[in-house]
Length: 124
Image (cartoon, rainbow, N blue to C red; front, side, top):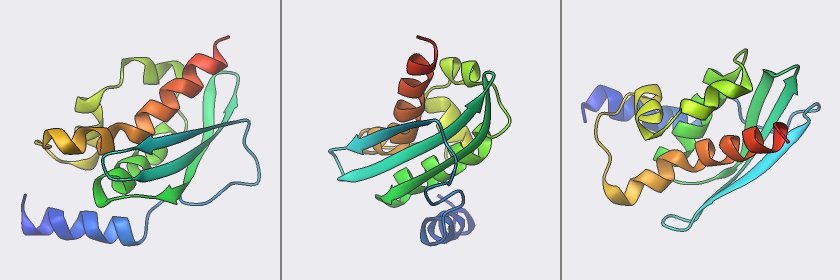
């Protein structure tokens, strides 16, 4: 990983975007990665199938924190059904990393797993 990218990720880890429990949300889901002990709660405000707001709280390693932070920013304004096709490659593209070790895959996808659970719940 390039030094510049490394410092960008560390800075986002220290000051994550989309962090905090919102005043208004209608879906929430917990995410947990046993590999690092990452634990987050994802909050979504969904109206008529569109994600109006996305945020999170909790803590974890650099990869999990950066990926959920970037994911929340990406989701705003998108249709909830758009998450159906998202996968690890989508997350790697969001955070700008080409390769992840096997031990970091769960870290990178902890937020995506939570939003996919919300997607399933919202379609009941």
